[in-house]
Image (cartoon, each protein chain N blue to C red):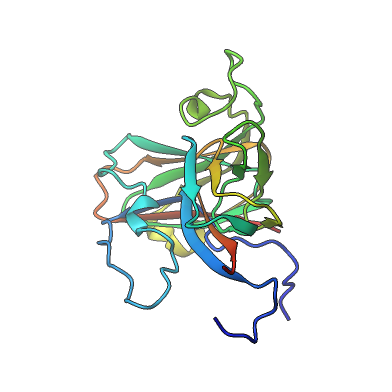
Length: 158
Length: 93
């Protein structure tokens, strides 16, 4: 029996990096667009992460209580979830999309060292919430560019 | 119009919208007598009925509704984007 009185989100992707990116496909006519928008708008994949390179994404953490996700890649990765409790940026301005990356992300929720030879043991991510804003970083600590990389982080409402 | 409808029934004017940091406006096709919305996205939705003079928030996964007579609503987020569904009820002419 679901606890239907709890607020729930239809979508809960906080961070998605899917390489190669799946193409956008129009929803079937007469049916709802269950995703609400093309997946390409959720997928932050831009270009392949070079060895030593990293990508970072930010999101409001406040709507959620916990964060979970998964990793799959053919290279070693370091994936971290860190949190900021800043209400304003260092210059006093309110947090917005332009300065969310400049906050102090002092609280490390989890750093997952993904090893493709130990996929089952290293492919899971979980962290409680430790701040107002969340920062997700994927660093390629392998020797080559990945031929595929899937990293999802989702927020749990309760 | 069916005569079986109650006297205060309304015609639904529904839309699926995406809010972002830049304030956007949604205009209903007619004046409403009630507006309901549900934030189906992952960020907090901010709403205004008076062209941005006053705002309130609707957390993701939650709903808001009230009996308001408006033609437009203004909406935005603090950061990122969020999707929401809105239904305005128009009085039956």
